[in-house]
Length: 476
Image 1: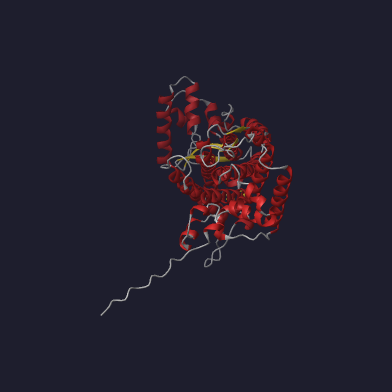
Image 2 (image 1 turned 90 degrees about the horizontal axis):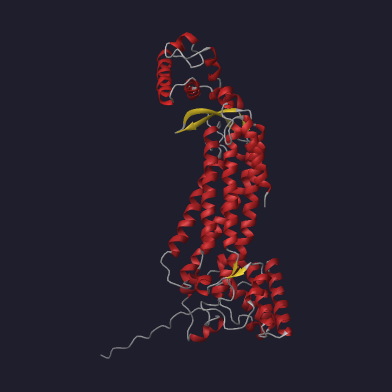
């Protein structure tokens, strides 16, 4: 019997090569699965305002270089404006098979203005184009994030100003340590967020170079005035190395690092508040507007918003590590791996902006239980250090004073007494240097007043810190 040869089924192909920007080299289309796998339109489409802006500026630069006539330039610019109107109105005909936002914009431009639209990409690559889009987007995002951080700072400053004279236990190792005031505690986060705001500003300044003109990796071969183009797009300089321009993602990594650090700061603030809201502390109550209940326990009031602020720091950390890991082994210059920078970057942007939208109103609505804070501030031998300091002022070396007061605390624990409850006779059993004024050193108010140096928790020092915080926040 003759064996019959099996007919091979033709391989499935996606969009025709002619539809691709790079299709001239290829004789068959991509496998549909490969096409879906390599496409980035689903997430990079948010870059469209910056892609259009960069293309308009590039068209004008090409015309200045004599590569487009004035008529061609105007036709392309008007076409791009029409594309922008469609995108803004939500009527733009996105085509997933065209891979990314750059190809979609360029192909739609050609549909609207004809073959002249094909001249726009002269001397330009998607490699330098995406680097530009990301930097333009980053600049916009940094401005929004810094504004959000400022709003959070302003709210914290307002709450700190209300509580400059409200004593609170300060903690180390989650054990009561020394009295502070609530305003001092809140201002700690103001200064953390100030560093965050400055950090994002620094990130923006290091991203302030034009990448357009680097082309694929070696630089454009046409006489485009890149310095003028940089000025047109609001950059202070042109990237000095075309390889670095297309393969660098430091600016995004800096943003992701800044977002992770900010997330850590806000997570710590949320951790304080959720702890203080427990019945065991009872220092704060969340507004109903920023709390939720239990599906089974009718009495519950859970600080879910603060808990989610704390929880989302994990996303911010993960996004930073994802992009660092993607970038760590890439040879110069551009590699498709770098497409993986966008989703973590966009997710960190969205996460951070969501936190900064909900944080200020949540902080403004908190009800602080300053009566409970005041009682707790004087408990658990919180002023023991002040008693040791009293002895130091009498000439006792601090280490001896520390040991002596430690024995007094041990005595109080054994006798069920507080430091404030000890009489002068009892104190003199430990040292004849104790005098009538020793009792005055043991009050919460005296402990606070004693710490009046810069950065201290004395109300007088906290008021100076408030003034400094307001000055810093007012800066750009």
